[in-house]
Length: 97
Image (cartoon, rainbow, N blue to C red; front, side, top):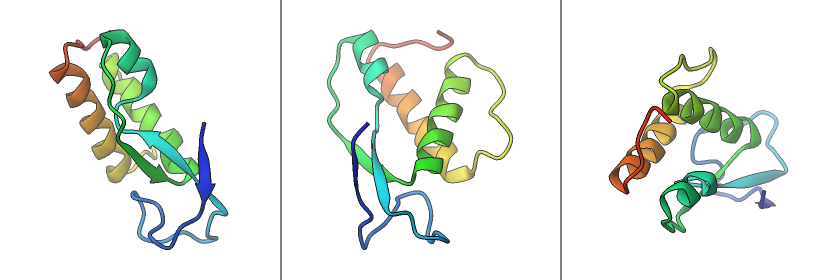
């Protein structure tokens, strides 16, 4: 996983962080494991705090198997997960896996 120092623009998911994380993680808008399943390359990334990144993947994984999204996953994380699912399906993938 690639990380970068916390930037002035911050995490795309949350307006504020307390405490401010020292680093952000690069999240692939269409995660690499899904890109490999459908043999497509999408280079778009978004900077996220670690918790938001983990929650985005938790929501996406639940959506991929049509299971319940874990409690505590926020609206912003769900939105990014829906975007990834739409990209996956639009490029030939199918859910549930």
